[in-house]
Length: 265
Image (cartoon, rainbow, N blue to C red; front, side):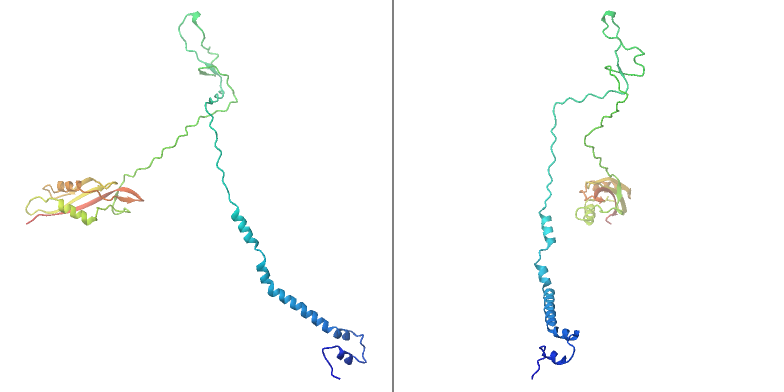
């Protein structure tokens, strides 16, 4: 007889003549069912573990829904309500003064029958103010001060008239075409006096204004024979410069110029 180990026949052979009521027989008899159940349960758990990412991807994302809702909410700012300006409304009467006010009657020389109103007596004006009309004062009245004004305040811009030096200026003044063009302009227009053996330097200073013009032209030192006056004449007819700048604003800049004099031998 061929024995099949996958059936329960072998259990009967093994436990033949033994106590089958013992728990070992029952456990081995139900072993196949237990194995099948464990296999099915394990397969289900494995399938859920493998398919979990796919299931999560299919679920709707709540954060995207919230972002879409936030994008659809638009804040609308309503324009302010225009207050209607009431026209032809008389100003409110001034509040009563804290101190009684007595009408002051200017004394006039007249006949007794022509007097229409007598001036107040000294007792009546004691600790009181004099005014155009008689007003009963209110000791509990609040003192009010009229506003100074509601006009637009004038903006006063500080004017910088300081004269800067070229050594510490951010943007130095410049002659149109460059400094070499300026030297050429001076050389072409300067007329040297016709004196034999005339040789030396003329030192002049001038201020380049905010509009580029040259002012305050001074001769620091010359060699005579009108050389200083000639330098002033040439600089006065000089074209406008590009002004210097400090902190982004045009400023006045002091400039010095040495002119070399060399007469023809």
